[in-house]
Length: 221
Image (cartoon, rainbow, N blue to C red):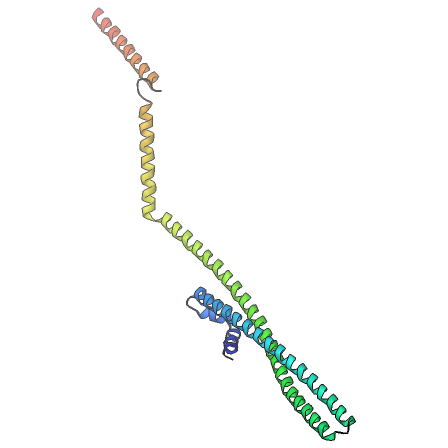
């Protein structure tokens, strides 16, 4: 009866309430699923044993009924031969077999009830087990979503932190230095700024000519 008592404890438990009160719902539900699976194996084994007992008792009942019928035929034969004493003995044996058969039929009825109860218990436990597995699947999904949200929020906090901004500024400064170096590379003798440098030199020459012309004018006065 221990296995059925444990089964009833599992089935009568309010699964959702237990999970809500549990500190670690995933751990609790895994333990419950394992307990249910072990109990289901035992229930099926006990059901199979009860069915075997029922079949054996049924065979015994049929055998006793056949033997009782045989003794009744012997009693008839004894009566026909005028042997009432032997007929009485045959009927007594028939009665003994019928009484034994009645006891076995009661046992057969009890065995049948036990088999039916075991089948009902198995069906109920299988339903409870399916519900627990579905609950576990949902818990795993919720746990994963919670971890994803936590990771995203941590990344957002990291992106908003002063240290992250300093890293962005440092990166921006490095890019600016690269841009400046690239600009300097383009201002060499063969760079894009050769034309503006040449133009400046020609302007200097023009200024020199103006100065010489002004000097010559002053000397002429």
